[in-house]
Image (cartoon, rainbow, N blue to C red; front, side):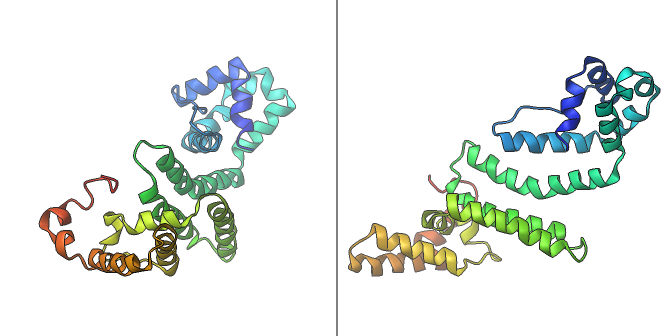
Amino acid sequence: MARSIPKFIYNHAFVLSLMRRFTRNKELRRPAITRFATTFITLQSLLRCQFELKQMFMSDDWRNCRYNRRPNGKAIAKMVYSETFWHGVEEACAVSEPIVKVLRLVDGEKPAMPYLYEGMDRAKEAIRSYYADKGSDSLDRQMMLWDVIDSRWAGMLHRPIHAVALFLNPTFSYKCNFDFDGEVMEGLHSCIQRMVPDPELHSKINREIQSYRDCVALFGFDDAIRERTLFMPHK
């Protein structure tokens, strides 16, 4: 539904000029790296220009133009007047933004692996927080979105190596309120067993892991503590 608004506006020069006058040259379409991000940015732009679009479709310029009398023009104007539609746009933006942040993390210049696992957890928590006070059916909507995220995460992105990258990222390892769940620890030890076939080395690695967790030896030096969040984990 939302895509039909910029499609209609940008296909008619008069309506496009009218929109730019009311929005002070703010655009509803902006290119992005992925199609999903483009759709999200369009939703954000519509939401940001909600008031101006309503003003435009209530203006005398719109009422007096020929597009106002066409079926598709009437349908677009009716949609812009609909508060139900705008509630849907607001919800779609709110629950999509945390996922788009993860996409931007993956597409960014810095290595994403040490942050991907925690980023997905943070995205799900942001969605849960959005629905926390939205009424009786909010839990169902939250769980529906979580199921979609989990199906993509488990099928395409989630691997034990991501759990290892999270565990070895001091930005999160030493947070006082951050706790590694069983899935992370299972991924860590799964990678160790796969990458280190020598059982004798497993005990040595486990001792090193404990030193890392307990922040002893080099991990406890003032420089190491100070620079936990200043340097990328791969450095």
